[in-house]
Length: 77
Image 1 (tube, rainbow, N blue to C red):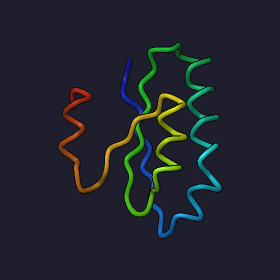
Image 2: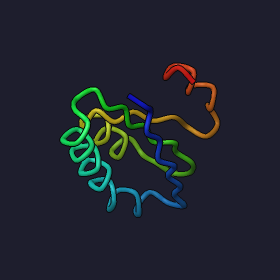
Image 3: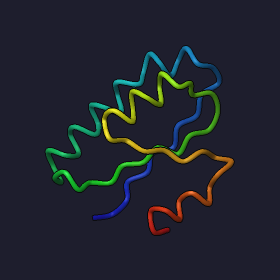
Image 4: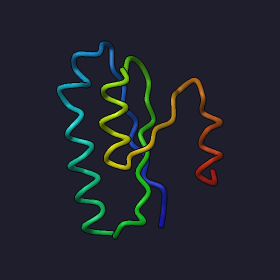
């Protein structure tokens, strides 16, 4: 299964919290299409607070910060 990565950038905390459900819906659709082993990771740049990150983690979505790009090695890249 390939690793699916979505780049997300945010200039403030308010916008991301309004849109956090979009990734959860996307993850649900990916699981329905490709099964539970699908790998979907967010590449985050900017402002993302613990509420946003907790919501994504609860959905099984992981993330990599722009300033920690070496963390992609954990996904075999």
